[in-house]
Image (tube, one colour):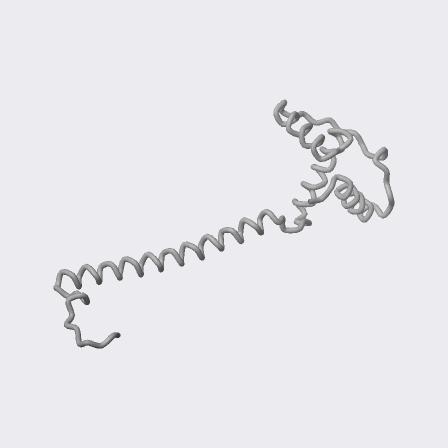
Amino acid sequence: MTTPQELKKKTQSVRDTKKGSTQSSSARQGMFIRLDPDDKQRAEYWANKRGFSSLNEYVAEAVAEKIRRENLDYDLPTLEIARLNELVDQVAALAKNSANLERVVTTGFDSLIGLTRGDNYLLDDEDGELA
């Protein structure tokens, strides 16, 4: 998991690459946004949980991350990889279960057909030899 400090370094390095110079957080331009009260409360919760110094820092990182995603400049999240692997495993398990179910049903019907014909291995004549 990436820490807020690592995110800040990554974001700052992306900005530095674009601008060609190092900029401090005080050189940022101000912006006013309106949020739904529920969204603001959630953003404050996550900003505190991730250790950001303020909600503004969290929102600035969120905007930078969204821009990177729009530019398709992101690693494939491990959550997507894990979900895809889980789905592959589930499909494999379903195929195996289906094959086992088919085998059990076929064997069961063969036994029932044999019983209705009167075939029973227990009624076979003994020849005195152990098989």
